[in-house]
Image (cartoon, rainbow, N blue to C red; front, side, top):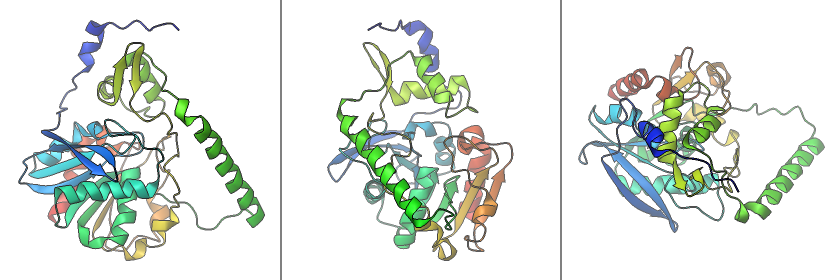
Length: 312
């Protein structure tokens, strides 16, 4: 095997990024035997604000955005999902397990109802959990985090069964080889370029900075820390109708922020798709010329929207 050449001097410039700030604290929370890496920005005695990242992300992707909320007087708490970042890997992954992890982190932070912000998968997790446990949260912000799929399928019942069977067989085939899988190594910039395929609107410098936080450096190069058994769409059994059908009765105030440019990692949802399901009390904001990673492309504007929503 050829070992990639790595020049530490060339890489060192990527270990910082303008306006990025490391968390003020780091701690560990155990959830059903899985240790989760938890990060906090802001004063320990400030009002708690739970901040949840999306699939294939990690808490340190908030290094620019979270400090903006913390500096406004909040204790911002985020964590690496199981199998992501510095949290432990698990034998299997599921949507419900991620939600149990979320509640473990919330419980470790406060027993009072709290504010919550979620991006992408994180927003969907919150929308689902809040519908079941509205007494644990006061206000909710979704940053492109509300999925939508038409509840009316055009496929015949027999065809739907065949597709479901094929999906299960594909998942089982993947699991049979999962224990021997490893992430492909490369230089720091190699990993940043791979990430750019999913995050095409984010700068190369930002993506390199993410590599220094979300990957580890082995003898043969850098590798993302994400569990290699995980793959796109691999968040376990999930149906958007679990939350969509119940959105008309959503129990707490919600701010839903949408971009206008579709990306690979996004839900591909437009406000009009969800309009029939959202209660009249929902605040909707659309960021023009913005992709899925709204809080990274426009951190200041996104933070202002959220802070204003919390004050109303």
